[in-house]
Image (cartoon, rainbow, N blue to C red; front, top):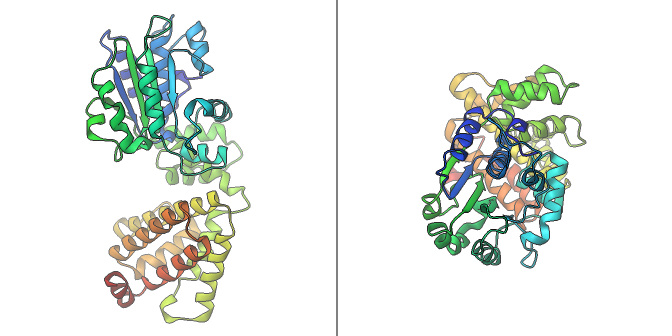
Amino acid sequence: MFQFSDIIGQEEVKSSLITQANSGKLHHAHLFLGKMGYGTFQLAMAFVKYIYCKDKQVVDSCDQCANCIKIKKLEHIDIHFTIPSFKKEALSKTLMPEFRNLIEQTEARFDLKDWHDHNNEKNAKIRSAECDVILHDMGLSSYEDGYKTQIIWMAESLEKESNKILKILEEPNQKTLFVLIAESSVDLLPTILSRCNIHKILPLQSDTLTHYLEKDSERKSREMLLRAVHFSEGDILEAKRYLADEDSEFPLEANLLNFLRGLINFHERKFDNINKAILQAEVLASQSRPNQKKFLDYFQYFLRQLVLIKITQTCQLNENLFKAANHFANILDIDQIEVWSQLVDKYHYAIEGNANVKISFVSLAIESGKIQDREEFEKFVSS
């Protein structure tokens, strides 16, 4: 585990990381920036393992020396982890057994959604107390006369707390290495970004991801695999979730179609249509929170495809959803689709919080119906 050879694609990034590790002028702070499904966490860990490896090969760590074995187990005494926690008193060190367990279960392919689900929790963040631990740990010398490393997974969870570690990033001790791993730089302070060597991890190429899925999901048809690849936008985790949904008791496509059917001619106030939309909203409200969020993510995917149809007259939806998309593409303008997307985002955020789920989905259905008619849309956006 945590070898470059384990990672799907990303050959240019791997080559660059190996070159930097062997340069003799290793920068003290690195930011790995990209969705976890692109291989971002794996690349960061493979980089750290390669640096510590006592018998480096040309293109990878040896995977057998004492350091490699300790790092595979997340037990190296000079490598410290900071991860988002769910309660003030539950600091990273107390959560490490669960973090190791998740890594083993997923072969290091996971993201914040998986971390939430694994702990049956939500709203994880890196708290102020964690920064105090970082300052303490990184203020000490290494035990094994090598680098002392701080790995911060989902570093954007630091938010303003990152101010506390800014000084040690600016003036680190000798042989100190910071490895920040994040999906987005939006919530990272510019002063933090300016101290880091940034490795931007790009989405996986479609053919690379397709080849991987063909071996990993042998029972799926090629057509289904190609739909998963397109839906995922280069993210292994999203592709695998799409495929898993096909076998689930809550199929996203069928539920989205039921929701959309209730919106057809909604503005005419036909009871059957309005009732259909509200009944489907109630079905969605009865689902688990992860299923509700998956539905809204899939809804956003549908709306992106809707924009694509408007612009190029093509998309990657299957036959049933393509018919639905064609219908809405013919009656909606781009600005209506944009507002629709904003509505879905609004209720995604509400459902992640403490909003009443049933009211949220019913409101989404009613507001989605209103924007189908141009005259009502104008009233809606001006209200």
